[in-house]
Structures are given as structure tokens and as C-alpha cells.
Image (cartoon, rainbow, N blue to C red; front, side):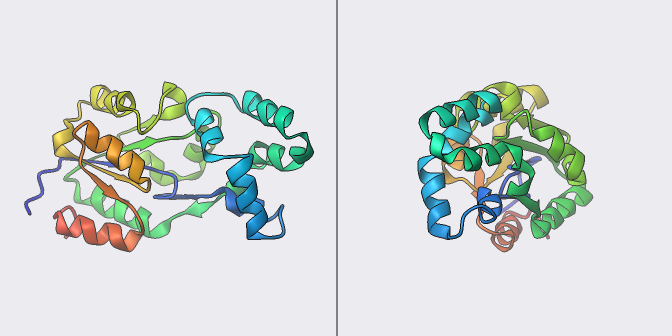
Length: 205
């Protein structure tokens, strides 16, 4: 298959950066079962997505403290100790990003569901984020993946033709959202799988 892509768009969390709240809560709870219950019932994915879309940490924390006052310490830890949810870069994916960058054949962008309040820390701590020509952050835009308007912001801001771009994300829902607006995607499961898929598409040699 001939490579017709001129632009590669990366998700960040769980693709290039190892973000996982379990990294933090393993220090707070004794068992994986306790962590799972907490993440499924209190600090849920749906709750966190509202911060990705621009809600403040203060409002989010207050909402949960009102509902679950008996879990105050663990709730407050989500943002008080937020940096502990990140274990570092996913080095093998960063190597892939570097290969694409050094080939100098594709424009590179990032499209991330990330709070505006914590993203500056990521910029300061991950040098490879500065390899992108642009990064669209959901918390700044007050919308997020998989909503069509979020992808459209990147297309419009950086003059990206989605038909000539390729999107990489660990969330199948976000890949399906991209495909709905004409943006082809790779569902990221591991650096090895990504490298294999990119070779099949002739993005990597």
C-alpha cells in the first residue's frame, strides 16, 4: 500500500506518556480490587472527562467530596498527587515518533484529552512534546475526543486534510470518532503493534 499520508497525529496519554491512575492508587489502597472499585464508582472515567473538557479541579473535587465524604483523602489525592499518575514516557513509542520526525516526510501533531491545569507540567517534563508542530488540548478548547468539533479544530487550525492524515489513539471510541470525520486511524495497543502497522502503511521503513 502506497503511503499517501502527509500528516501523523498522535494521542498522548497511554500512547506516548504512561498515564494511569493506578500508579498513584497502588500507593493508597492495599489491593487491585479496592483500586478498581474506587475508579469505577468514585473517580470514574466519566468524571475525569469533564476536567479534560475544561472543568476545574476544584469544582470536580468538591462534587465528589459532597457525594462521598468518607473517601476524602483518596479523592483529594487525584489532583493533589496528580504527577504520581504518570510513570514517565512510553519509550518505545517515543522512539517511533523520533523515527517519523527524523524522516522529515510527515507533519506531526498531537490531539489530546488533557486538562488545561496539568498540561503545562507535561510540556515542562517531556521534551518530545516540543517535536510536534502543534498540540490541540481538550482542556483549552472546552471540548474533547470523540466529539467531531474537536478533530475539526486541529484540521482548521493547522490546515490538515483528514484524508491525508493518520491518527493514533489507544481508545477505540476516539478512533471511531476520527473515522466519522474522515480521519483514518490506528488503534494503539502496544509500540510493537504500532510499528508493525506503520510499516504496513509505509510510514516506517
